[in-house]
Image (cartoon, rainbow, N blue to C red; front, side, top):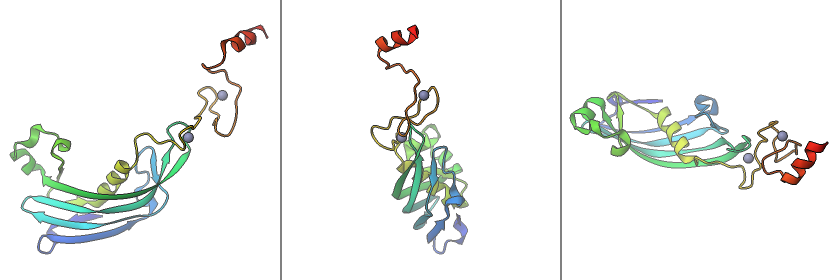
Length: 170
Ligand SMILES: [Zn+2]
Ligand SMILES: [Zn+2]
């Protein structure tokens, strides 16, 4: 969904939308949605700036860092964003600063892309390190067995060296 600024009455507007998981999947390499995502918010134009604030709610499925099994995680995020046009950005002398330093986003001056906002908020809500549980055993680097559910007989670095020596004799 895009909000066309020229359609805003009096420079203000409200928006609400429900995305089916398939509309946004995959959100990124490790995140997918398992339930619809709802977004609602307000837009306000002030000169060359646009302020967008609102709320995103959904359920994400994130890969465990160690075993790659999907982990369900609810997302409930409030956002408050500020946009300026590319030309405004350059004329403000801010070009030397990155968007992150300014905490504003640059846009084309015509429309705000709500799909992008929703995806970004979901990515921000998910921790960079995601584990299905603290003591997840992960996947065997040798054979790919999920060590949480199966044992494998691969030797690993933490094998007792005495056993390793014995193995060589067999
Ligand atoms: Zn895991
Ligand atoms: Zn193994």
